[in-house]
Amino acid sequence: MKPEPGVSGPAAILAGERRALARAMSAVENETEAGKALLRQLQPHLGRARVLGITGPPGAGKSTLVSALIGACLTRGVKVGVVAVDPSSPFSGGAILGDRIRMGAHQADERVFIRSLASRGHGGGLSRTAARVIDLLDAAGYEQIIVETVGAGQSEVEVAEVADTRVVVCPPGLGDEVQALKAGILEIADILVVNKADLPQADRTERELLAMLSLRHYEDWTPQVVRTVATSGEGVPELAELIERHALTCANQRRSHGGRVRRLIAASAADWLGCRVGG
Image (tube, rainbow, N blue to C red; front, side):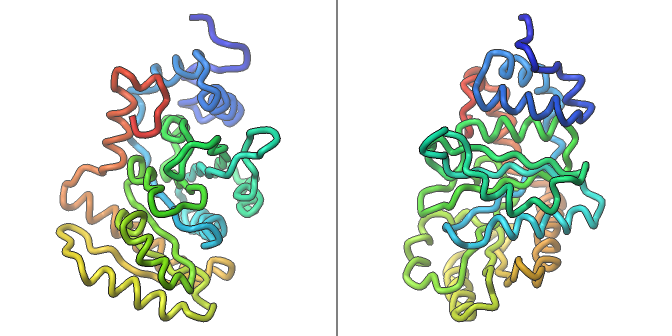
């Protein structure tokens, strides 16, 4: 098949060429035939990246926290890709680039690639093509991929299908919302973050989350609660350490990384060309 204008072949993606990667993401997001063909060619090169999912209610400070985590990764010499799902503009249908603005401090760093995706009305907290954009970053050699969901509610748990480590960000003062969220996004968490921990009611929110965790039995990994103030960086090193501990625990126990396995199975399934997030 003749490539569509502007879409490079797999060699450019594997070499990490940023312009080629950006064009490929546009082709994949628009579900073009060239984008689907490129993903087929890249399939043997997938599975190296670790995917970190960041989700939580609107206003929890997810984007600021992601920006702080990018800095922590760069300090360790890790190449970082970010997929940030934003609400769709009611006028253009494209992403409202709030996430990109908050992460702007890292935009010029060649070790960082940030892509905003419009949710385009897709439920679950991600976009329809998010998993395939993750595949492109994986093939391009980004070792850590951070996926930030659009402001998530109780049922928006699709990030669990693509992430190896799931972080749920909870702002202080959730109150009764903890009970509502408990049956949804809180149950997918490997790590619970009380962000904006310098605000009133942070202690109460932490106690409620710890009480919730005490009611359940966990076999391989007990979800941890950590407090952060993303705007100042307080608690971010501890969060980065917890993320690393979770990855090492899974590896030492020889467990398959659930999100990675599901994503790769979806990429190789017969109907994966439909670009569905969870296959």
